[in-house]
Amino acid sequence: MDDNMNNLHEKMLKLQWLMQRHHFQKYVQRGPLADPTRGQGRILAMLKLKESISSKELSYLLGIRQQSLNELLNKLEKKGYVERIQSEEDRRVILVKLTELGRTESQESEYDLSSMYSCLSDEEKVTLGNYIDRMTGVLADQFDDDMNERFEKMMNVHSKLANEKMEHFMHMRDKLDLSGCLDRVIQNKGLRDQSRKR
View 1: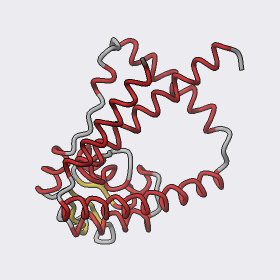
View 2: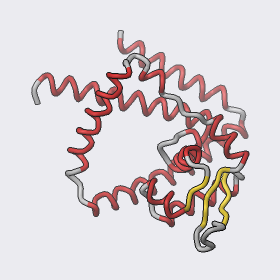
View 3: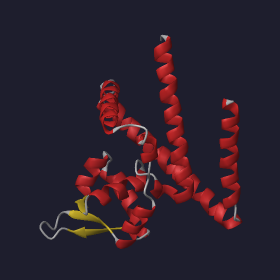
View 4: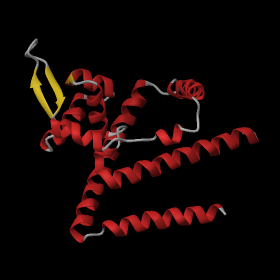
């Protein structure tokens, strides 16, 4: 790789790292519902866009298997955030809807990265989107359906384990009243990261 490619690659890695830190900070604050790109948060984000949707269509749009979707819906249903009802037009179809509590929670969990894009004009945002589409297209063409299926399985397992560990940590944090402790750790880590830049 030449210097330009190395420089670009480093910038992409730094952006990815900063976005992951942002995800983690939101996750610590709001739990698994805070991230509209993963798991339960993804379902809430989709249901905010469409009032009611069939579970089959939801599974297709999210790119996950019906079984994986049902596991996530069961968790959301237990928390009172979604409900499943039979369609009046076709009794074989199950519709998924946000409850009032789910609507409130999804608004409180609003995931805002708009500040990251505030430095770009509308035209630059469109251009950036086009560049990203081209790059993801090139990468996506390198993988076959079997690889995508294995990746999905791996991510589901990873997500499930991560959620269980995080839920256990959050429970212990509340039980031991460590909420301030974690915030200090994050702040100290941020300060150390900033001091390294100097």
